[in-house]
Length: 171
Length: 277
Image 1 (cartoon, rainbow over the protein chains, first blue to last red):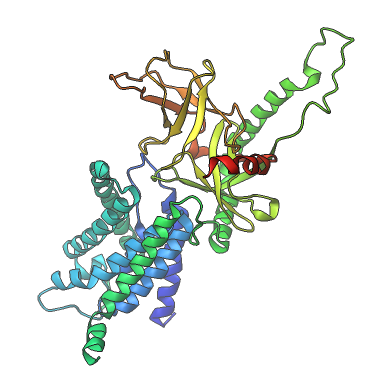
Image 2 (tube, rainbow over the protein chains, first blue to last red):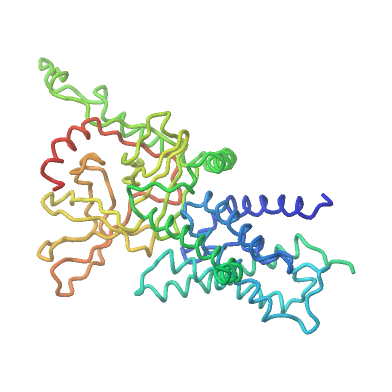
């Protein structure tokens, strides 16, 4: 398990199964649909090149699509967040840059930074997903309501997972 | 030429993203078309296998309800058996062999994955083309209409439920057979569908049963869809806005029955000369 890519692949399969078998079954009121798998894109190392993160997003999306009968909608939204992630990272850059030892987790980057970053990414992903799922102009309030509620629930679950799975990196 | 290469090098990330996005969205929009099958879905081998493993654990939590529903169907069928009728006239014998010809066959299958919270909702079942499941077969449960098969792999099949965009099922009202409409779903509530096309001169009380009309050969005639809710309004337009309480609870489906219409090819072959011009 010393190779970080082996570790990441195991984690990758785990997150697809988690989304496919657990979070796809959460169906209360039809407005909330947590897309927790986006944590795998959020927490990619800062220096990952854009092409590699697009390829990871493609595989991740196809994996999730295979479990949820959305025919490519998850792939499309995860491609989008993988593509805009470097831009958002650039805007949210701390004063003295990113430390390559640290993970992009809530412990290493601080609560405020992590919340802002993941809220932006998940918000964009949900908006894209629900717009293409409903695709009707007269349902624009439903789209926004679904986006906001699902973003809040997804953020909550992602922060729980952060405290369950990660420890602060020792410098 | 050098400029072109420079341009491609500079924008290669964007171009990669752009073409992948176009390709994936193309797949997504094609999948809305009923006749085109998509390749990323739960009927594919790996995810079907995993979902079935999950179902094997999950089924133990719902055994009681599935036994109940099967017992209910058994009781209903037992009541129709000749043994349970009292003979009023002893001398009359019916020979049914040459009057009836079988038109519909039913195959049971188990639901291993389902959704109810999307705009288009699908169900995965654990039977596929090896066991004779075909595209276009109608699907019912013991409480009413469920949907129809849109994609089949060797061991699994995907059903598009009536909780979807662009699904029209022609139906009529049990108490007033001449009233015909179309069942559609507006995407809001997974327990309520809409009946369109009923003109406003029809008098309804609420509580009437909606049955399938069975014209296009997917469903037999007289399968229950649901009951009319009594909150319809007549706001001066030509047709009534009717909500229908669905008979099927889509979040608790266990066993479904697939309908094979033996005479469908015959119906289609005689219709095709006149209907599709």
